[in-house]
Length: 192
Image 1 (cartoon, helix red, strand yellow):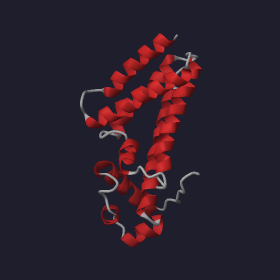
Image 2: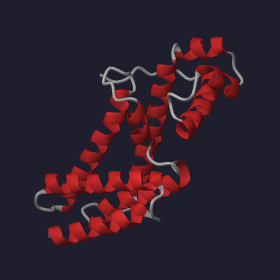
Image 3: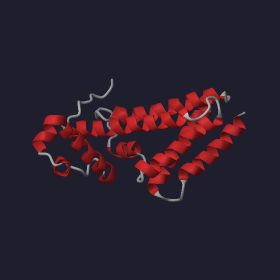
Image 4: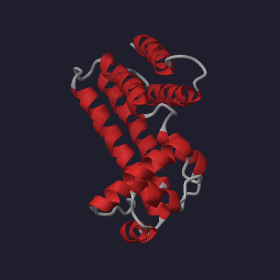
């Protein structure tokens, strides 16, 4: 079942912009509706009239990031010849650029999952859905490349990718996406 979404009025867009920035910077549980309303320049009543609950704001925040991420990846993949290893590697390149532009503290879905692990939370399916989409994307790209044991290789690429996102957020070493991309290239070359 897909998460319920709301229509965005100008006030709702201001709330979502403020909440998105605050949730990413400070964490979902650390940010209250009073702060979101204040940062958005709306009353708490307006916030609740538009969203109904903080949980719905979280849903909108994560769904919007997911939609932007998927469009970002699709645009990058459209530039690369189908069936090539470069198409798989384009996902790692997209992640490197996305992290530099939009995710200096790491993956918003991984960060959200650290706070929302209850499957009954309305945002949970968005978090898990994005990661399932990533695994399907890697599987489809590896099959397109015609690598043997595509499912196994796709899972390994997914682990490399997700590990790079976490390592980026932790800042332990420079360019984890580039490191993961290099290992992915080696795996793809060895698979043929």
